[in-house]
Figure 1: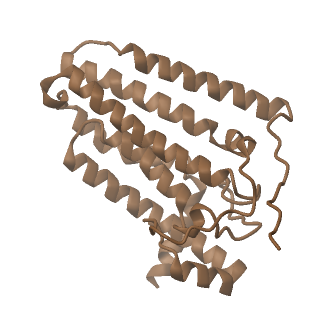
Figure 2: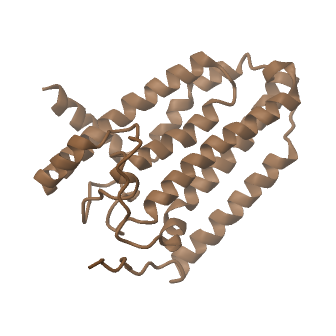
Length: 251
């Protein structure tokens, strides 16, 4: 059956989901081979680039406001196998079944919008969908097997990827910054690296010189500092350990 084949493919892709998305940007090599500044102006391109950066930051915010409310045993970056200590159905999960993957898409979208090339945008978005469609199929098969009817009922009324505009349910937990800081520092660094490299490529192709705009160097250094500080704190201290705190149930 097709769904079984997709699930098997998704299981393999799930294990390497931290590396394989980089290959989605391969079409960008062809796109940048004939890159020109938007409107023929470096200043216009810079404004556009900051707007694109905002899209990526929006994806990071979506991930953060999802991760900050979930249980430690869910919505993780594990790659060895599926795990879920509970079924998430509140917060962003009350509007869309895969808010973290939507966040990933927005982060990627910000980077692939930079060249302002419709063909590149279309091809890369399609590759992203084919890739994550299989991972989602694997995860949904696991969650349905573990949680049964509650999962089926939630999935029936919750969109897979594009959020509905109503039906928000407040999470039972208080928002925990430590959970976000423990999990999302890598995404911060990747965004910093991506926009720095894109800016270098722009200068190299459009102006045929090795250069980089100072604001992107600063953004990269900030993201690198955030990454190093949080990684050290996570690996060598208990500062980012998370305590389970729930809102008091109303009478």
